[in-house]
Length: 373
Image 1 (cartoon, rainbow, N blue to C red):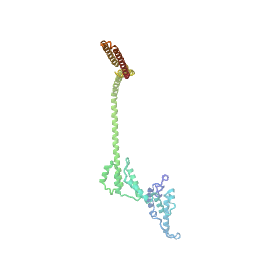
Image 2: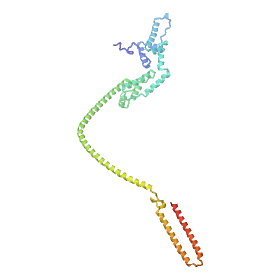
Image 3: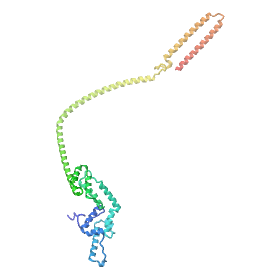
Image 4: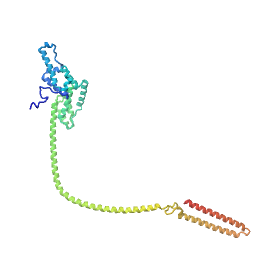
């Protein structure tokens, strides 16, 4: 079972395997592994191979030991890489060259390194504890940032990191933050002590929240029991009130039916009136209108008002004729016989003139009637 449960990273005799992901994590572990195995090997990785000045036929025991350490360092490095990563460094002559090539590949040049440092510094400055996030999760995110900066050569003092974590806590943690600042010297306080104090406070808050939720649950159960009792008591009153509501609804329906019937009859009566008015209006529209007296039923030529005026004019002309005749007769009687011819001629001229005058008068009246028609 122990052999089946063996995985990479669980043995001190096997180097950590790097498959191209999370180079910073592998680099730190590999550094610790080489230093624990043989610190001289780690010196070879950092500073280069041990020099051997003598030729192969003249190697001493010390020279052979140096060559053995150089080869051992290369072997350990190759065993810590996957096949893909081994192909990157297979042409390198020394273990230091291998290590440097991997660093440049995954950390980049100095410019790339500075850019990554700027990104991590921005994340560090904007770091805040998120909602529904525990202290453990928050601290894990914080250490990822600080470890990344440390791998790139950027480090912060312990007091600065303690203050940063305290500033990143939400407003609900303000009393605890104030208590920590008053009880401790933040310059010498360690992160482990700070995180332990915050985790203790978090556990107490969770316990208080559970107790309050239990109280709320018990209060809810009591409220439900009270509601059930009130419901059984009010059921009877509901039945009696339902009967009263049924009676009221029936009465209301009767009243609405009578009102509807009355409104329908009234609407029919008003409709009949409107029809009669419309018929009268239609009949009035078909009749002619007189432009003289503004009345219906006749035109201007048949207007009785104009007929009266004409009758008066005719009556006056007749009286004038009678008067003229009488005057002429009197003149005839007084005149001499010798002047009979002249008077007769004058009478004839007068008659002719009177005839012409009457004819002109009749023509004027006809023209006046035609004009008003």
